[in-house]
Length: 413
Image (cartoon, rainbow, N blue to C red; front, side):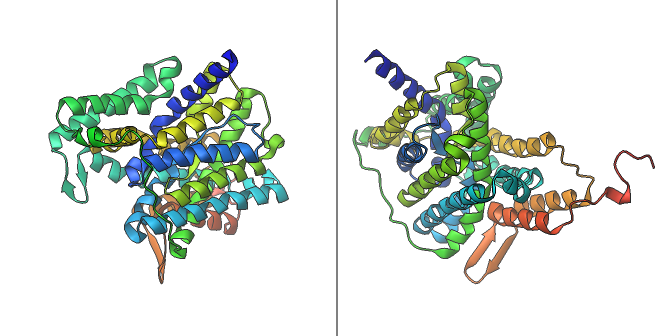
């Protein structure tokens, strides 16, 4: 009995660590935070079913889809966007099938660091303008929150997040986003920015609002290539977790199973109106500190997430978080994502003096950040989806053995 209680508390701790990032994505994209909790909870349980509960992973909202979701919501509406997110889950099955068929060597050839690095950078930088706008209290070309108050709230949430991530120790260091949101929210209450009547009027128990998906193949084809980067993120997350626990999850239960489990979760989350889900580095960090590698704690975390999805007042609090508070967090968050992409290039020692590498990175960054769109009839390809395809095609077409200016590395001029 005591052991079960201890595992339950550990599961609650895992959800606490993942919570800030988990609810941030729906709050930024206009999706329902309750559905994000439900999607993460049920998606994690689906993952455990497919992997036979062998891997201590909790799946939470993926940041890679923030920009694409915002674009799709504005272009096709929520119902069509949900279908697109559901369809994005099939990319996980495609990659899982390729790994099962050809092994990881084929994936490394198809998606080397020179492809993945700049695509991850675009994920962060393509929404940088939105982050700055929210920090200033602006949305849709209008000043929604007074400018001075907005900058103050954004500064408080950003500063708190930075202090916690850099100077805090132990478990606190794993929740910088949550710390920043809480500090910004408290400041917003004192400044009179938050109307708490919505929280007071919200019921304790409430069924999450469900929007039925609508078949839209333009939205589906737009979202499918977006999922390439998160699938690679998943592979890296599983490998990193294996180093922490001393287990090789790429062999047992196998990457094809972990990817399929994640893909099932993405499909489910998309159908109910939640953001796609992925592995969380924060959770891996929590496991490093607690040294509790029992996958059952993820079961408890998932069940708690499902319960919170039906807690009406809790979700009303989430919806009441002011835009500038989220904006302050986003300034750091999106820059961090871009930095991870840069780190991918540096760690793999990608030589940007080689013309092919320079071409791939340059085209991806310019098209992704510049918002280039390819439109054929009702089909749009833009942002992360477009540059993912561009990077893969360029990498396959351009010869791999060029030397810059005809000079072989290591030789003097």
